[in-house]
Length: 169
Image (cartoon, rainbow, N blue to C red; front, side, top):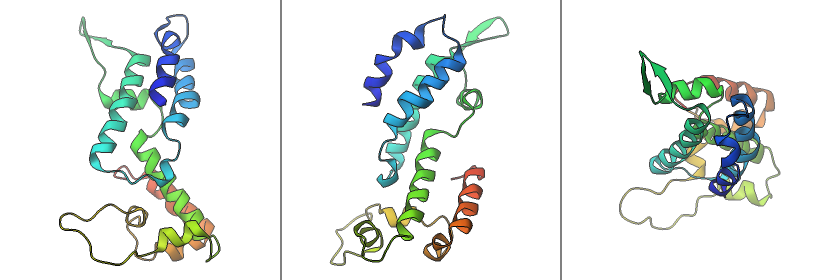
C-alpha cells in the first residue's frame, strides 16, 4: 500500500517546481503513515528491518537527489539523507511506536484481550531451532520490570524519551 501511495505521488516527487520541504512533508504525512500502519503489533526480524530501511531510503533519495562533490555527481549517503529529513529512521520509528503501544496495553484492565495476549505464555513444546520472535520480548527496553515502569505513565514517557535519544534502539 505504501508503494502504491509513493507511485501515486511520483509525479510530484519528480517535479522541480515543488520544493524539497514540501516533498518531505508529503512523505511524512501521506506515505509514512500508510507505511507504518499497524507497526505497533509487528514483530520485526533483521530482514524486515532492512527492507523497511531500503524502501524509506528509496523515497528520500528521490526527494533529495544526488549532490555535486568535487566537480562530480555522487549519491548521498544514508546519514546525509537522515540528517536532511530530520526524523528518526523508519525502524526506530516502528520500535518506538511498539514501545508506546506496549505501555498503553499494560495500563489496561486485567481482563482486556490485548493485555492478556501480550502477557500470555502459550506453553506447550516449542519447535526445534531458533525461538520465534515475540512482541513481549521486543518491549523489554533493557529493564527487567518494564511492566511495573509502564504502569506509571510519566516514568514510561521518560523511558521512551531516553530510548528515542539513544541511537542504538
